[in-house]
Length: 66
Image (cartoon, rainbow, N blue to C red; front, top):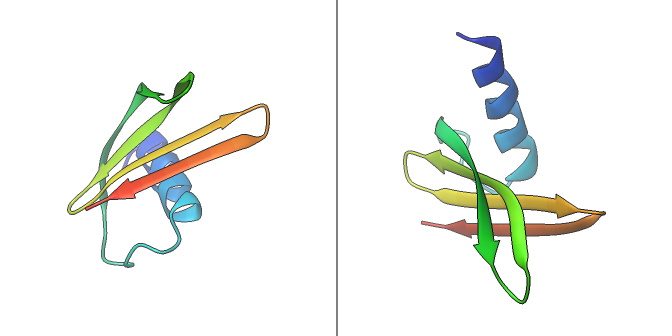
């Protein structure tokens, strides 16, 4: 397994603790979420979930959807 995948998979697990342990990260992308402002972060795609995370100057944004 590639070290970058292990690192990203670890980030996914650490950030989205409420997801089932059976969820495996497939891929992650750099992207932005349009809110009141454009929020740049990462989109994590697993078998059953789309999860977005951003941290801008300590202001964290979490979005998870099935």
